[in-house]
Image (cartoon, rainbow, N blue to C red; front, side, top):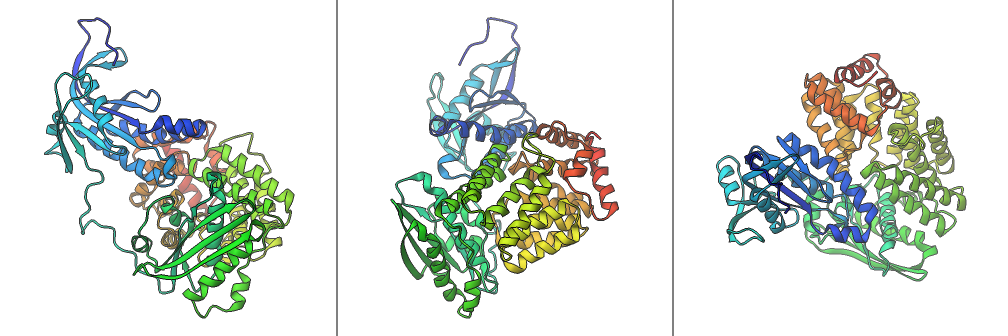
Length: 593
């Protein structure tokens, strides 16, 4: 630690110091510097405001580290726990090797304030405690613990007196156990099994020697989920929730309890040269018993036939009365070449990254890959559907004015129509048409398109349907539909919270809307629509300071954002009173006209 300038009058004060840094940050930078920097900025956008929310002040954010000062140890510890909880939630969408875990140390002591910096053993001890903490953990000094032991309900482990580097006297250290042990009364209630055969398809293990083939493995699993979901006789958990277990050691019985399903499908993929081997096994999640297992060896050109075989074998086990005609109907038209499908899978991977980060580079990449896919196979409906989605993404989230063009909405509509022309039974295409029609203010046609998607695939999850229902003046149904989707996708994306929060706002149920919208922006800090609805909700609750903070986030994402701009991209409502209610909230919040 550097020392303050020689100034006998440098002010001293007692302060609680929080020191944090990312465990293994150098290794993350070495593996992928650009992505690590981008991910860190996204995490800091969520974490740093939490410090001020808990009455603290950020002193320094050099590299991956954070140094903050609090007037209260209680506030500092509560802030640390909130940060670790938020990071645990954010890390859930990253593969293990890309997760960022803070180590946090907290101390209370005498510090010297010299211009914009803090010095002294109070700071030094906090930094050493941070080094002792485990990734994702919190360590506090004995002095800090004495201040909070009777004020907070903490579960701690006493690590005893320890000698810390460059600290003269040993320091008693306590490790805060986060999250605290869950009692039976606090445990999340088990999801009831549906009244029809239910299944979760877990991410397959990539046994290939090339880690970069991960997208191919994920794409095969995604296709199996999609194909199984077409059967109205089955209840199939959405990809988002299944993939929460990616890269983790799992107990299928626990998975069954957490997702509320009877069966779990797991497997592996091994690619060598131009051949691929897919192994799959179906397990009864209640007992752990294996019900079926099979292995498929094919050339890459035959991967589509492999997927059909997997579906045809699993379905009779789960629903013996599924008709052969239904099986035939589920076979999506494969692209004419492996290369076109390969580009499609990579594009989906890039689009998922956009949903997670709202970084426009991912949309550029998805669009580029889809163009390559369609250049090889101009009749591949699924690629057209995702292209439509990329145009709708920038229509609603104008994060890059060069990327957005005046014809984006028309192009989205055209590509969705083209996908339906090629494959009238593709649910994704009808859902994207519904989204585009909503933006064109053709709300009755939009609802009909979404309902057609659901009729084709009762297990198809598309959160945009909820937005359409809200715009059409049916927020109660939007809540029902979104809750049904959340049962299919228990680890739902932030859009779910945004839809539910928006629906409660339109019903003037602001107290119910607020926690949902705050959850949305904490999980997706660059989601413009979430901040807009949060600002309006705060304003309607007369929380004007909080509303202004939310507006500042809107302006951070879109510096030229205005109420008139929101009128265009947030869509007019079918009911003029709903329009007035929505924009009244934005005006109260202070969004520029």
